[in-house]
Length: 192
Image (cartoon, rainbow, N blue to C red; front, side):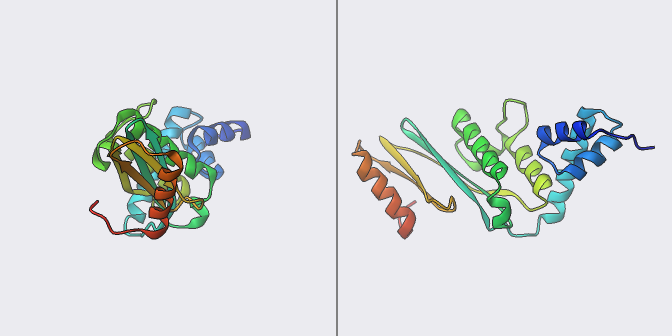
């Protein structure tokens, strides 16, 4: 027997999980109002959606980057449609993953996927949950980390292209910005 749930509870669960209103309602009904159990139901649904969408291609998304001292980091979080990529919470998840990458100084994508958020969820969990929330395949097709005497980053205004540039000495910020912007625009061939 399902339990009647209040709109306030549905909204509360939605704020906690970013899942859709109907998903929150059915999870709360199935969990008989137990929030922790409802969160688990939503996470399981995310894994189910992820397995169903595994063969899809995720060619849209957002690029986020940050320079921290002599290191620079870039994360591309991909999805299937531009509509999902433009939703604020999608960009916020990309930013959350970038923050985790910077805090843990993850060397590569494999390492990043195992790094944990403050609440104990791994980056891989966050990606799976985002798949459940959006109903689209979500993945991290690219993660970059460089180290150099002077680093700069540039992300194009559409948040779809970006560059990390490492210089062997400190250069004026305007020149660094210009080089990174040109590299992003022209996609030059380089060693790495």
